[in-house]
Structures are given as structure tokens and as C-alpha cells.
Length: 345
Image (tube, rainbow, N blue to C red):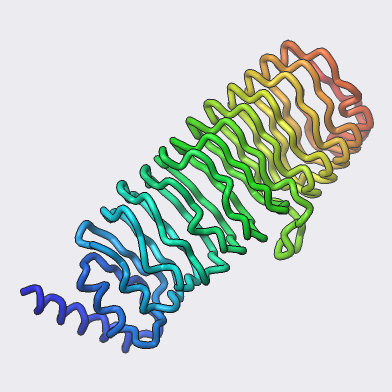
């Protein structure tokens, strides 16, 4: 029966390859499927939008040593493997995702991969390191989500030269992130991370060459329970939207020291422990600015060169004592010259 099923799978797959230039998805959920890869793809290239390896029937993926390239995404999900060997010499054109692999501890280092469109780690609680990505130079999106309780720090990626967006979502495990790379203009999303306390990244002068508009993606930092230290994007010149809100332990915030333009919104709201904020003192324009409900905020040192905004709200910062010249050059709110008001009630 196993032999009949295997032959049927081979026939169906060959038929699909013959009928279309590129498969939609190639789902591999048995070891026999993997073992047949050299037969089905003698050229060493898998033309599929998604190659999905899934299921407890997978004992190892060493058969991928016969594959030189996946012309699409590689997704490894719901496998019981504790290590992955066989990907070191493969090229992945699009996304590489490891998802819901409870026992996965280690991945053999990529040797040839220099570029990955999207890199995702989702619910891999035993994974200890991302050092298998040490040689990768280009990542469009890096996304980490869910339970990675053994992955306490991210300070790898020594070869990384380009990153457009970094996301850490609803994560348990990671407590510190440090990128020493000379990277700038990176969009950042940090939302509902339980253990994250320290984030220092993307302060470099190497603004992404492929970002022709020199505009970072949105900066969204929300509801991170224990986040205390933020230091990022201090060489970025132009921002889109920025929202840093509801981070109750945030004490140190360094951002936008050289920025001259904010495309839409700047919000600093409900960061209970924040006492001082300094930044954006070279910024001349921002559409919408809201600094509100920061219960222990005492000093502002920001937006000293701002000339124009459509809307400015500074409210319910009940301990605010010193503006240090913040907003001192503002002469236009909305479309006409008017006075501006700061209030605390």
C-alpha cells in the first residue's frame, strides 16, 4: 500500500509539473516524498510558489541536499524534528518560515543564501539561536511571533546589509534585541511582547539604498509589558507614522535625533514610567502630534525646529514641568498662523 501511494504521489506530481510552469504549492508530509525529490527535480530546481514540509512523518530533510534552488517559499511547520540539516547549500527565492515546531533546537547554517524576501519564526519554543542566518545579507521583512522562550536574545545577523521591516509580535522569550549593523530606515513593529526589556537597533548611517523615497515604514511600539529601553532610528531622516504607546515600564526613549520630516502621525501616549523625552529637534514638519497621558512625564526636549503641523495635542501629562524650548519655533497649526496651547488637566 505504501508503495502504491508513493507511486501515485510521484505520478500526480509529475503530471502537475508537466501541466504548469510553476506549482502553486508542493506539500511534503511523508519521508518518501522527500526521498523522491532528486527523481522529480533532477535539475535541482523546484518551481513552486510554496514548498511546505509538515507533519510528524518527517524524520529528516537531508534529501534537500540534492536541491539547489526553490523558486518560491520554503515553509517548515508542525514537524517533530529537533534539528534541520540539508538546507546549507540551497537558494530560497522568497520566504523562509519555520512555524509551530515545538522540538526544533538547531538549524544547520546557510552557506549560500545571501537574500531572503521574508524570514519568519513563529512558535518555535525550543529554538536557541538564529545563527544559521549569519551569512544572509538581504532580508526584506524579518518577523518573529509567538513562543520562542529559549531564544532570549537577538544579536546575530553579522552580514546583514539591508532590512526594510522588523516585527516582533506577541512574543514570549526574547528579552533583548541589539543590531550593531550599519542599518537605517527600517520599519519597526513591536506589539504585546511579554519579556522584551531592551531594544537598540537601526541607528546606522547606511540608509537602505533600495528605499528610493528614503522613508521608513511605520514605527509601531505598543503594549510591551516590560520594555524599559528604546534606542533606534537616530540616523533616519524621514519617517512615516510613529506610535509609541501603552508601554508601562518604558523609561528611556531615544529616537529621531536627525529626522527632518514626519509624513503623518507622531503619538507618544500612555507610557506610564517615562519621565523624559528628547528627539526630533531637527524636524520641520509633522502632520499630527499627540503627547498625552504619560503620567510621570516631567521634561520634553523635542521638535524645537518644527515650523508647521496640522494638529498638536499635549494633554494629561500631569507631572510635566519643563518644555526646554520644545515647539518654540512653531508658527502654523492647520492652514493658518495661530497660537498653540499646551494644557494639563
